[in-house]
Length: 502
Image 1 (cartoon, rainbow, N blue to C red):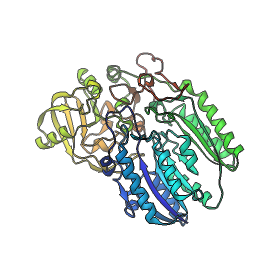
Image 2: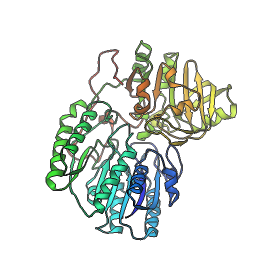
Image 3: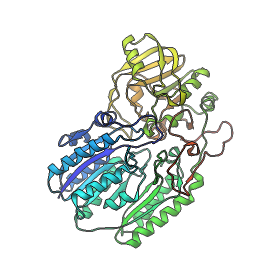
Image 4: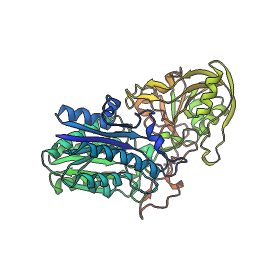
């Protein structure tokens, strides 16, 4: 069979300080730049991306592929109308040029909000459905953080979500989507069942390595394996910092008949509802987190700077934890990545070993944040081109622009010229920093860092420094939430000195 293949990724935090423009999709960062046509296959080969997994599995099954386009942009506020329409035009121009196809596969995120549409994927899938007609199978992969909507479910024949956070199974999800498409191409059509849940799950507690999500995904796989009539079962905890009417968790199933699909959705949705109280944990202030690291905690102590996570719409440039480290005179600490192209350029101009008077960070001006002004030593420099090696980004060809390692006392800061979640040790090693040799490691990340840092961590804790990815949803000024949707607040304070296990 002949299958059209493409993708469009954006995770939209509607409370973030900057929008996503067309140019943001054109540039490469940790993932490939906007790529169309045959070049798509070379760009994604070997990467942990759904489209890469789909392409490999579809080719192995003997299908012929018609490449459309693939692109992504860093999480941010709304995708501009111009960007969404230009990317859509590229996809549809390629689809028209491909001629008749037997199926369409799209690698999507599922939490895209545009300036003119709350449901970016629902809009895109509906347009594709209108273009290909009712009979051509349409399958999409979705991120675990998708805010799945009724329109998305209606337009697609199959939506297949990741099952791990950190997302180590992205390529595997693409392979599962390819198997699903094979069944559709045989002529079968499954029954659908779908349920939205009635509370928001804090992003930092959606990790599938720890309870309760670990238990919920174990339950999902048990349900799926127990019923041969069940084609696919997905649980998407959702992306909470999105002020839209259909934000939040969902359960979605496909089966031979309605009984199989609806039974699986009901059972898994009940399990998710029963876990609500478990989605709350200890959050430290920056000062508490650093004090814990200096108090004899198991080392290295990894601190997640979750609210400024660029993987969730932060600008990776707030300085609450850096200030706390310097104030406490931490003797062995590293923090990264700080997004600051101006300071990176200044460091490169001065050269390795020089001292620079820098105004570090706070370029986005998040709620009055001011730069950290100090004299730093330029410890190391890099061009930001390297290959990641951790479980999530393995093989990704990073393009982060000029980078620098700056030192002030016992504190090192890894600075980059592009926003990128600190989720791979290679990001630090590129500028001569070995994270395992430091007592405190501060990462601008929520959960993805656990894929490559859990094995070296003596303990992992979460801190709430300034940033738009609010760990406490009660603080966000939502306007569009549906009536009755609950927000899980911060968990109760733990005993002094306690820490979350890795």
